[in-house]
Image (cartoon, rainbow, N blue to C red; front, side, top):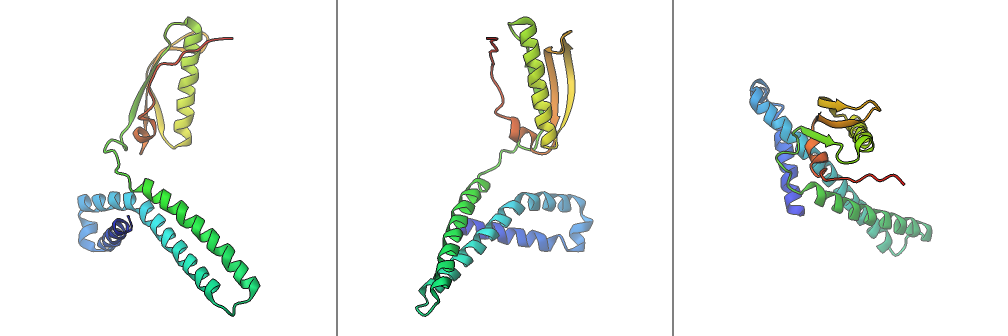
Length: 187
């Protein structure tokens, strides 16, 4: 994993250097390609540098602990810092594993969501309305734009059927597993 991270960091540094060149800035297609790649690599490199800093802190704390003439209070501080650094290393390793997973090529696409109030009449339509509001609010919190494509509203504020598009970067990746049938039952 570390070898792959080094290559990603080298690629990030190369692209950053290329973006400073005037011939790249004048070629809009190449510039756009590099910017998209840089945007994808940036969180990985940032987390990798955080990982390297945590490893450096752990090494410094270990060397302080190994010094035989060090003050007991200083050793206790070094022990605490070593524990914290180990926790940071473990946490950043897990986050890096997630960041290195291959991306779905459709992740940056938009999503069309369709909700239908099935059997259940007005109760099902009201629940469909609640689901629509839930997805709209979720989209708002994530910075997505929600646009109603078609709707068949009921008198009580629900929907027999509603289709809407959620657009924005990463909309598909956030909502691609949203599917299924739900049953509402009043108690």
